[in-house]
Image 1 (cartoon, helix red, strand yellow):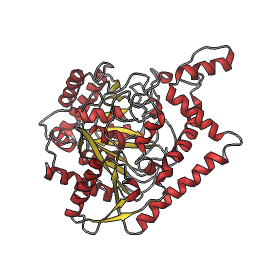
Image 2: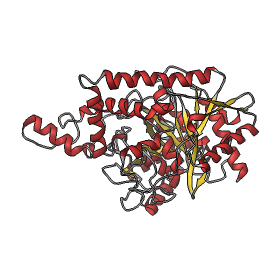
Image 3: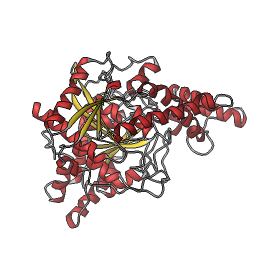
Image 4: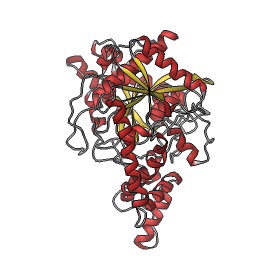
Length: 484
């Protein structure tokens, strides 16, 4: 398993609590002190956390400490964690970064959150995000942008930028995010942490506020590959409350840290290395490939020919599903209500003033794509292209390739306010959306720096082959440690 040269990793924190050498309450108080120092709860600071209740969190930590004194308190005993604010929690508000849900507290808890708490984790707070997870920068939150802890003039990525920033700033070793087109991997790369999107169905979506149901995944951030693997191991598994939850058993994901790479074939897809790719990012990928070779892997050039169709396909399908999913936010059932002239006026006022510009844009695009006369031309055609993209991956993995390696993003984090053109922002997900369209597991691992800013390499594997993907992730991490 990869050795952590920084602060103790999540498993080491748990071991110290289990051995009576430290307490969950102590770790939590350290997180709160750091949050105050960096302005994690403040729009004038890093603005990482939207919701928190320190008295409630301290009570949770005290309960873990009491259990640890007499019993096994769980695989995450005492480990502080953060939760993206589109995963519902029974005690803390769930806003989805939107005024339309400001102050809303769910009557039930997301399965992934429940599993973390049952494993002994202590929630520090709910993290900032692009409104309803629609964005790539966490600038589209109704409660102000999150700033990148590496450089506060830069975005942390999105939509799970708050969770990535929480790990990068040291508030926690593990955080939950969500992915619809790269919203864990892209901010992980921008903030210099590890981000994993598992296979579709590997982690229950029960309690994840839906954006695009066929593309949404619950993902995990970690300060190291081992932290992220441990978090994923805890939250993965079948859930009868999620009809899309897979019944496949969950293997020991952390065991991938000791798995040999002899016989593992790494594919380098040529479409992910276009001539205009920053040569420093290409060089970082080459360094990662060399690290994999040096540990026994073979490297092979491959092709995924429909890659250039991924962005237009995604931006038909995702808004179409969002248009349907967000229709429930109407001022009647729950959430904000803004009075208008009659029922129709109330609907119009609530949705017009409750949703931000980016969410409104995507709802309108999706409604248009699903409307009579346009469904076949747009939505049905996009579904057909999605199948072609998935078949590209199927063919490559059937040919004997086990893991693909690509850049995670085409650039490091951009300046806050720099992406005024929505399409330019959408292109920051150009290397990540394909994994969501195909439903395959993918992760980002730190790969160095460009102009002092973190970048990542992306690893992708066949469905439910997280173990082999993680084995490559541990190897890339080891290679960087050896070069440091």
